[in-house]
Length: 187
Image (cartoon, rainbow, N blue to C red; front, top):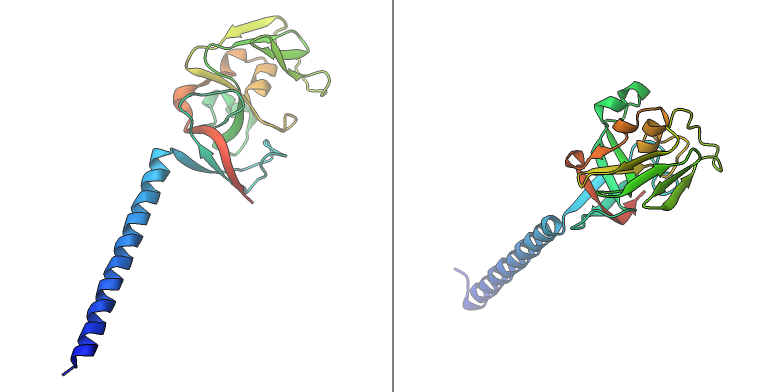
């Protein structure tokens, strides 16, 4: 039979272990709550369309905002109308260039959003043979126009527009699975 000192030590150890596990459970619960409350998304980048910002194989932590803003990153399934270009990636990671109620205008060499130039196609030798010159489109509240940072290889709204399919260049916001600002990049 154990003496009183041994019993007291066991009781203290059991009490300390219980407190430790309660603290771990509370911290785990808070971490899970923060993850969902902050609307954090982990995305895996495939391909080189977002270089030099992201590289193929990077994991990106996105923190969702309450409103969509230009410059944010969006993840969406490749629209069916874009399949003619044959990329193997089912989900695309792009930068939002224009969001709801923005006005997009193409003058034959430059792309403008709300009157500000966002891309000079001629300066970058970007082929846009089928994009309609003088084209103007006001995006609905539920549309985005998204481009990769590596324009020369990116399957994005600009490529679809320049291939002569301006009506297919706008992504319905309801199809966006994640969007937000970059919190961290894991290489």
